[in-house]
Length: 254
Image 1 (tube, rainbow, N blue to C red):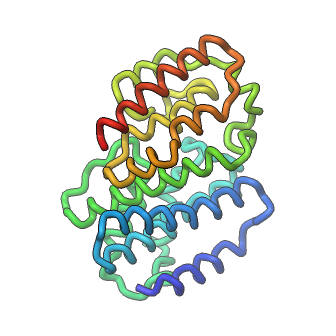
Image 2: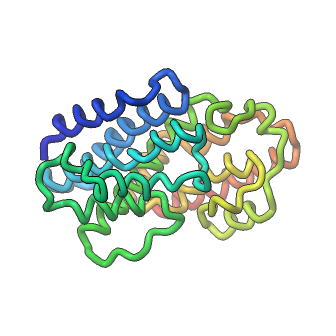
C-alpha cells in the first residue's frame, strides 16, 4: 500500500467540492484528523506495519460518501443519504477504489469497515482481521470527532448558537440511554441538546482501551460538555449527571 499515493488521489477527488463551504471544510479536516488518530491508536496497540497502513487507508476513505451528501443536501442527517453506503457504492460498485490502491487483496476488509463505520452497533462480521479494522475505524472516527466538537462552530454542527442549544432540554429517552451506558441511537434525538449528549455518549461504544486512554488524557468528556453554556437549570443539572456517569465508565474501562 502506498499511502502517499492514496492521499494524492483523495486530494484530486476533492477538487470537485467547494472547499470554502464550512461543512465540506469540516469533513476534509476531519478525514485527515481520523488518519492521525488512527496512527496514534495503532501505534499504542503496537500493530504490525501492514495493519497500520491498511488502517490509515480505511481512515482516509471512510467518509468519502459525505462530500456528495453535503453537496446535494447541505446536511449531515442520515435520513437524506446513507453516506457509508454511498461511499461503498462509489468505491466498489463504480470501481473508484482502484484510484487509491491498485491491489484488490484488501477490498473486502476495506468495504466492510467503511460500510459498518457509522452503524449504531457493530455486527455481522465474523472474520477476525476484518473485525479488527471495523473496530479501529469506529474508534478513530469518534476520537477525531472530539476535536471537531471542540474546534468547529456550534452553528455549523447544530444550526443553532451555543446559547440557544444550552436553553434546550435533554429528552428523558436520552437520559435513560446514558444511564444504561448506551450510545444514542440517532433517530431517538429530538432536541439539539440530545445531539450534544450523543457526542459524549458515543464513548460507551469505544472498542479499545488505548482509545479510552487518549480520551481520558485529553479530558474530552469535560471539555465537550463545558463548551455549551447551560442557561436551562435542569439541563445544567442533567449534564453534570451525564458527566459523572461517562467519566466513571471510562475510568472503569481503563
